Length: 227
Image 1 (tube, rainbow, N blue to C red):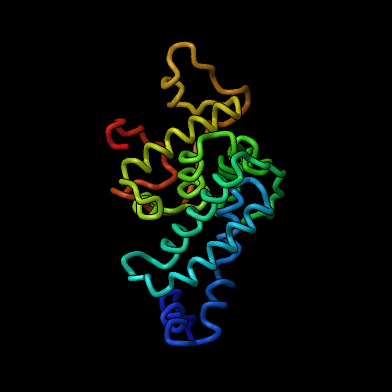
Image 2: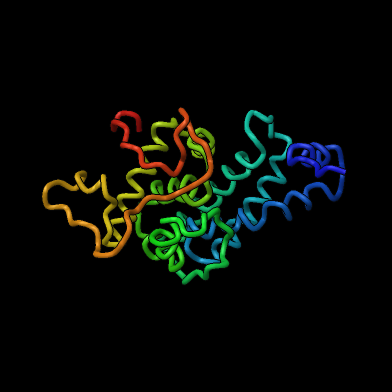
């Protein structure tokens, strides 16, 4: 017997199946917690945000119209729960993250593992960049969400997502003291180069994106008027 899709489970829940929503929670709870954890940088806050996300999804189940995948709909709720939590808290409460926290799609031997994941493991660099950039980088680079889906999650144009990802990568690289090659020029003639022996900040992923590019490929920032 084939596994029921998320959408089928949600429909079963709405028909009164008492186990269907619990199965959805079990299927997605690790990644939703991980998403909140990367945005918030603190396990306790992430647990609260993830719980609120699932409660909100339960309350709003009848509003799902299949205009997007269930996972996209749930990610939007989780991002909103995490950013609301961050604003209520008012400041970052960062705790060190272990390598097993929040399963991420990381290709073995990729540059993500060599550069970005080391920053994400301690969470410090990621939580020090602006929230809107951090969320875009977490979605597109760490969670491999295609730009078009990220645009639905964040409720902004695709061009704005690309701009935020690009600027987030640059900001993260600056926090690491390791500006990406090809992006150094953005800082002008005096921009610092990469730290000796470090690979450039470039995230490798498997998800397709808008226009045939991949969410992990470097993109030029869009013009400011797209934001």
